[in-house]
Amino acid sequence: MLDQSVSKYPNHIFIQFEDQRLTYSQFDQQVNSLAHYLQEKFQVQKGEKVCLFAQNGIEFPIAFFAIVKLGGVVIPVNSFFKASELAYILENSETRLLLMTSGLARVANELDAKLKEKVEIIDLKKKQSDYQAYSNKLAPVTLSPDDLVVLIYTSGTTGHPKGAMLSHKNFLSNIEGALQVIDLNDKDRFLVFLPLFHSFTLTVLFLMPLYVGARILLIATIQNSKKILKSFFIDRATLLAGVPQVYELLSQKKLPFFLRWFLNLKYAISGAAPLPEATLRTFEKNWKLPLLEGYGLSEASPIVSINPPKGERKALSVGLPLPNVKVKIVDKKGVSLPVGSEGEICVQGPNVMQGYFKEEKGTREVLKEGWLYTGDVGKVDSEGYLYILDRKKDLILVRGINVYPREIEEVLKQNQKVKEVAVIGINDPKKGEVPVAHLALREGEAATEKELRQWCSKYLANYKLPAQFVFHSELPRTSTGKILKRSLR
Image (cartoon, rainbow, N blue to C red):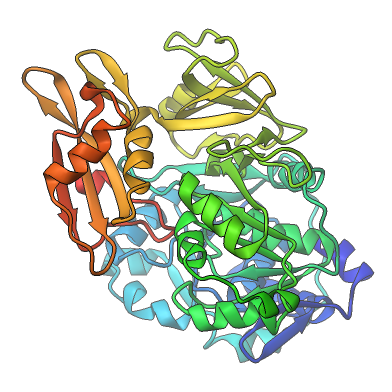
């Protein structure tokens, strides 16, 4: 894929990061030099797993493809991890080589001494002059589409992360399926501020632009809102992809009509967490731009569905499955349910992982007869649109009746005083479980438990009403914006 884009677009800029610009040809040369260095100095072989612990910057994409060019397996590690979390992945994946960026040196240095003896740590910035001295002439490796290329560890919101084994075919089929829905080409500019280690960013904002010969406008962190806004107008970004909080922030900003003349955006895509209906409506009204919500998971490389830009977009729906992906809804026994019924979402397609690394039991639990059991609760309407109701594990059983936290969260998010909310279930001696709402209010707002319960009672049956309201200044989140319900519990 990289070779094709290099031969078609050698002088097109591929990555723009701060004051750096790399054309496709220059990028390829740096990739080959690093690959040669890893091969000669560390004898990296086909099939070998290499951890990539890197912040957003030029180093991540170069290192990613250097490993791939050697037929290796990339393990993109969450750059927000502490030493103990990094150690778990290094040990579980049996890795002997860790490529990292200088900003994460402190974490790598805190690793246990015994582990450091087993793992070679390479600071990509410090070794840049070393590897650039190596020849960029690299002998090609023979690979098959089913060869493993990425081992991506799930976010671990329910315990220790598991390594999803993804092949070349998984990624390529996912990109090709998405490109049948969203029209993209070499003139497009992808704005990237989400962390590159995340499966959503990796496929949608790194591999997909590379596939079509487009440009990546890479920003170090989501915190740099000035740079993000500058990229909208100065760098002429055409595609924005973010998590719901990004759109929540942008929806509060009303764009002056004269600035709309400078806006070059074609698409805004939301993923990684549920998008509140209020955010969708406000963003589209203020920005005059369609906001396309999609759904995916690491185990599916990761895209499963997206609201089509040219078809009907349905609020609270995550759209239609990609053309090469099938979705069905099943009951607890795995029996397919009719249209409109609520049950577990199952996915089938060439994008579905090979399994979890060293986790036969975990693999058997989620891969059954060619279907991936996602653990998400949803339904499909008569037109094939998919709706996510909740995580299977987050389901609350009040006196044996299903209560979906997402439904309560949607109601509370419609209250103008509420900034963010997460609903969890806790044990109750009389009812089995009851919902508890954890929330943060908007700046300058005040609300009482009684007031919020009355608000909920206008829209929800009594058994769905939260038994408690717990106020926070802000809710705990993963690095990609998902609220950590495990932490709240």
